[in-house]
Amino acid sequence: MGKTIIEKIIKNNTGIDAKPGDIVTVNVDRVMIHDIFIPFVASKFEEMGFKKLWDPDKVVLIYDHLVPASQVDDTRHFKVGNEFAEKYGMKNVHRSDGICHQLMTEALYVKPGNIVFGTDSHTTTYGCVGAFSSGIGYTEMASILGTGTMWVKVPETIKVSITGKLPDNVMAKDIILKLIGDLGADGATYKALEFTGDTVENMTVASRMSMSNMAIEAGAKCALFTPDEKTAEYCEIELDDKQKDLVGDADAVYCREICYKAEDFVPVMACPSNVDHVEPVKDIEGKEIDQVFIGSCTNGRLEDLMAAASILKGKHVASFVKLIVTPASRKIYRQADENGTLKILADAGAMITHPSCGLCCGRTGGILTDGEVVVATNNRNFLGRMGTSKVEIYLASPKTAAACAIAGKIVTPQ
Amino acid sequence: MDKFSGKIWVLGDDIDTDIIIPTEYLALKTVDDMKPYAFSPLRPELAGQISEGDIIVAGKNFGCGSSREQAPEIIKALGIKCVIAKSFARIFFRNSFNNGLLLIENEDLHDVVSEGDNITVHVNNYIEHQEKKYPIAELPQNLVDIVNAGGLVKAMRKLNGLD
Image 1 (cartoon, each protein chain N blue to C red):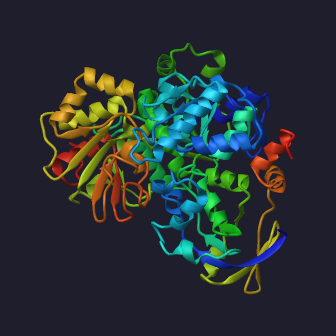
Image 2 (tube, rainbow over the protein chains, first blue to last red; image 1 turned 30 degrees about the vertical axis):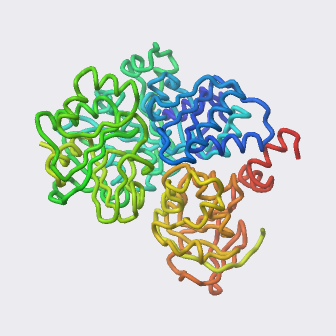
């Protein structure tokens, strides 16, 4: 019988022909810890009685949620992180290079077919290069640091096929929001998503990343794309036979199959305050807004900033709108500077911030208050995510967000 | 832990981890410091009303959202004995058992109970509410092993020959 991508990755890792529902112990290829949770990981690790990391080179520590510190106590996280890295011989530490999920693939830590865990729910992102990656808590992270292993229940797979050419002004973000709306916030819980079809084959790795990033918003354990030549170029490798074979077999068993025609997609938004509350932008046009945020591990990449710039070029944001742009990494910041994107955005009235999680996690850089409305390109619109619980958060693509910033209200990008 | 009774608090569907504990309080030093802010975006008064031994009954997808382990830790620190929901998000599910917070899935109970009711939980067997029984599934063995060890930290201490 054929296998899904996740079944192949687990077979390659463990040698076991496991089927959905089986519980197997996998060997972890790489882990990521971010600044918010490093103090908790460090104390659990020592409480567990471990004396050394299973493999210091496989551990990556990234400061992003709290960078630069906006509260005095944030600095404790950096201090604890630095001490932990020093004590256990970790070299892979990023202190201000960008958002963890951007850096894990951009800085070449994750390869197709790898099994990766991170202390952040959006760790599903690395499925964009065909890696099985998923979020865990800090106690489990501490146990992996000591053992290098983790138990997983082999998930069932939902296959999502998308074929055809996307309309202008529809981005990968619109596809994943539509899918989450159709599946519901728990529609893929405990399950793997597998994307296929010529629409995703024609996508950039960056666009695939926006989709795998948000898979968790439907509850998914991971979201997988078949590695191809674009993946190989992005990861700076040649694909080996096992990596080339990470495609769902024709006779693999899926628990559900969903097919979309690319031509049917329209710009959409996730409306307050659930990510699966998805509506076509044209149905909510006219609502006045106070702020726009373009950034995050979902949509802070170069192509996202360039898409926003294509809408904002030669125009200016509405006088009462604050437009905040946060590149996902230092590399992206530099590229956007060198190719003139940042100038277009700044000329249009954008505030451009340092690379970090920024406003996405509501800690810094533009938090809002009761009654305010924000259009944002990140991945969550939960109550209280970006300020008080009476802020209305609409999630959209970078093009839609840019169009809204100019209009001062919700509009469809033209 | 075979059988226990408690007063219930009823919450809806998709109770996310930002509701259980908003990001702005995550950098507080201890779970006890964070505890008063539990559920504050939704019901700011709730954390102060919960007593030791109470039970939460919720709808589907409880604990969706971020990987913050403070979510189950805070629920446990508030004295909640277990959470019964139609379904749980996967990271929250793992985090809860790793910290010794019992979770039970049941499709029907949420639709019939009212806040303040008393229920009795017979672990791995059924829940009793107003003389009606609601069957519950047995937990997988690997989770039972973690719970029996007293959580993942204690299981690892044993592995390292400390306890």
